[in-house]
Length: 281
Ligand code: 13P
Image (cartoon, rainbow, N blue to C red; front, side, top):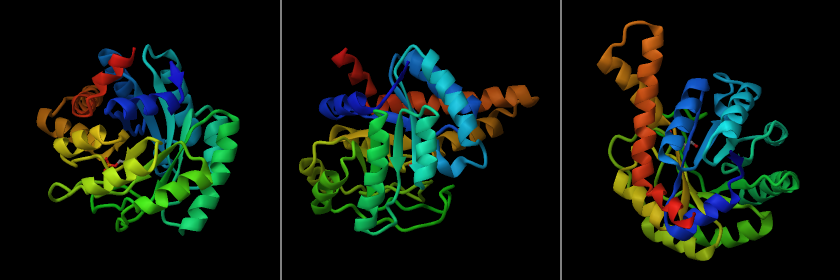
């Protein structure tokens, strides 16, 4: 069933687990994620990123996402990931997205507050929770992000002011991860995470989950990160499966890619200890 993210994220934060937020770029990836969620009996945050608009339009993403979310036997949040402009986000909400992110993390603190507040005011009229980003999660060479950027760590002292001024429901923080694949394993600043977590009651979000190290991600989930975004690991796994198994024919190739992606989500459910969701049921 399609749900919004509010209660799910609060429960995850309370119980010390995280819900995976995989980005879908077509029907196949979206279907693979929802099927794994159903097999595991766990919620999933089915995410569509504005930057993928050239692969799949917002309208196409809404059709696919609404269809799969509504017929699913488990809670599915239809989430707009990295919305960069208000009109795009408002349109996504009008098309049925049940959660949205405004990413104004490259703007000044004041402008980030102003833009985020405008999105919150619109979204809350439709009971759509909003995620914003404070500090900036940068991008590695192998990222498909819009541009390579350096990370700027989130300052705990800014978090309270930001949350109060915007009324945002969850917050993406920058504590050492980056979008894309790393040459090694990133160093996560857990002290900073703890400081931020103590400064606010709202659930925290970690972007750039791919290849961040399972122990790192598990620890983040235990320390207030309720949602972890993963994208690159899925497309890398799909491509590696194709190279390894050398499927014959296009239909077999698609199936092989799906299997590669499914295994990644299954793995991250274990790493994020999402099974704890069931303790609250
Ligand atoms: P990765 O591609 O590094 O997993 O980042 C995904 C992400 O943060 C999407 O918002």
